[in-house]
Image (cartoon, rainbow, N blue to C red):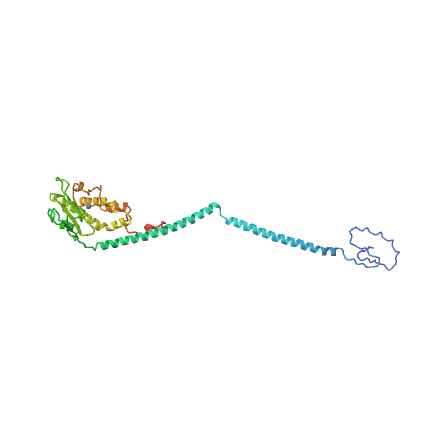
Length: 326
Ligand SMILES: [Zn+2]
């Protein structure tokens, strides 16, 4: 026989038995939830755990809320941390920023240089075209001088070519004529020599009279005439060849005085080197052949050395950056 405290019921047999002695009441633990049942009665007591379990719900909710908040906070923190790391990854060092600023500055400077070079090219090209047009116009001019003062030496050169026609034709100056004039338009021809033992001969080429050569001499100075005449013919040649360069020199701010010595030397040297006039003929003149190693094109190169543009401007000259071509 067992005692079932859960039901509190007693199992009886058909034969009554003497009532057993009551068992001592079991010791209850202080915190036992079991309520002792009375004999023969079924008792119900609400389990102590139920209210306790219900009371736990707020705690559980609180824990869940805390955990949720913690999770959210953790997520926020992680997101913040990731943003910081991303920003750090994107951030530039001072050196990198300096490099970029330098590159941007260099690009800006390059743009300025390109714009400046483009303007310079346009200006130079316009100047070149204007000089070409002025030269073409000048080459159409046919103005002729009028004798002001009769040449003391007469109206014909000594020798076999009294008007210089044969020589002029030989150098392509078929339209050029000589005017024998001792007036002021003959570059200030001064007339008689300073003493009885010297003679004067003088000539001039004036671009106002494109196809004329001035010539004058005093009697006794006939031997000087031919070298002077050839020298003046060389001036005509210079202007036929280089007239635009003289305009370009003026445009570049190179004054005539800056190259007049070269102009005189080039004329005499061309007479010496190309047409066989002896250099001594010019040695004591105002226009000696003083260019050592003179060569065809020397005057052009000399003007270029003074900063005069001697070739037509082309765009590639003004490129700021080298072009890389395959
Ligand atoms: Zn001269």
